[in-house]
Image (cartoon, rainbow, N blue to C red):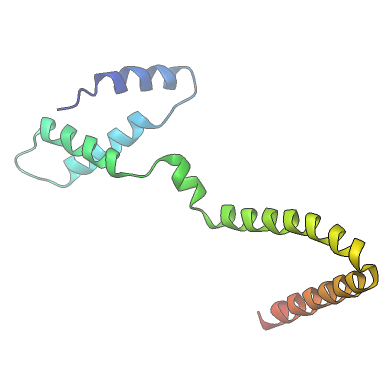
Length: 121
């Protein structure tokens, strides 16, 4: 069985300093759900082992944060801007008039696409 006394001490100290890290609240929620389940043979040692297993199977906070759609959209936008910042000057150096026409057509196409998308809503 994993000793959870360190978690209570560290988490309570963090809570008293005003920067709760959420570990104790997560354990408390897990504990309350087990009590509310109404099992007749409640075993705290088994609950602690289940909690240790549950926390080891959960993804980290960083992975959960990076898995959000807004992060994916931001990364795609950053990548598009970065590629454009490198591609447009090189293309403009080789064929300035063609690059200008292509950029104007691209911006007009984006405006038309977004206008159609707004009207369809």
